Length: 252
Image: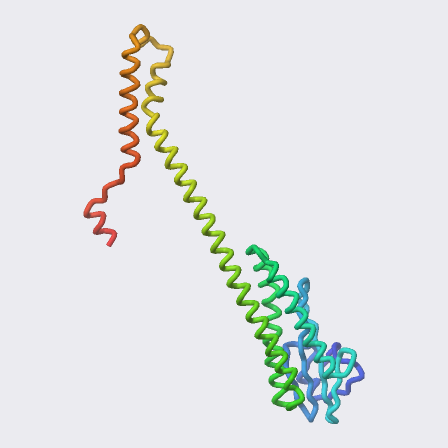
C-alpha cells in the first residue's frame, strides 16, 4: 500500500496507523493504534475548488504532539479553528449586506460545504476528546460553538431567501392583478364603442346607401342606437355567467 503523501516524511507512524489511513486522506476521523493517535481534519473549503485540504495531528506513544503544518501540534489546532472563526465572521458580514435573493443564494452555496465540514470536525474532535482526555476539551467546545454559529447563520439565510422569494412573488402577483384590471377596462371600452365603430365602418364605405342626402336627425338616431347597443354590449361583458345546478353538483 502506497504511503499518504500528505503525511510529513519524517513522521514514523506505526504500520497499523498507515494501514487504516490509506493513500488518501479521506473523511475527518481519529485513528488510534498502539498508543499513537492521528487526527485528520479538513481545512476551510475553498470557493473555487472541490479539493479538500487536510490537517494531520499526531500524538506519538511518548505523548508528544506533531502537526503537518508549522508549529506545535495543538497550537496549530488553535490556529486551525481560528481560520474557521474568521470564515464565519466574513459570511456574517456578507449576510448583513445581503438585500436580494441572489445574495442569500450565494451565501447558502458558501455555507453548505462549510457547515458539513464543521459538523464532521466537531464530531471528530468529540471522538478525540473521548480518546485523549481533557487536553481536547477546549478545542472540542470551540468546534461546537462554530457549528452552532454556522447552523444559525444558515437558517437565517434560508429564511431570508424564502422571504425575498415570497416578496418577489407577491410583487409579481400584484403586477398581474393590475394588468388584469387594465385589460378589463379596455374590454369595457371596446364593448361600448364596438357598435359605433361597426356602423361607422359600414357607413364609411364608398357605396351608395341612400343616407348621404338625409338630415342630421338621422345621424342622431344612428348615434343613439349605437350608444344603446354599446350599453348592451357593456352589460353583456360585465354579466357573470350563470352556473346551473348540475354544474354545481359536479364540482362537489
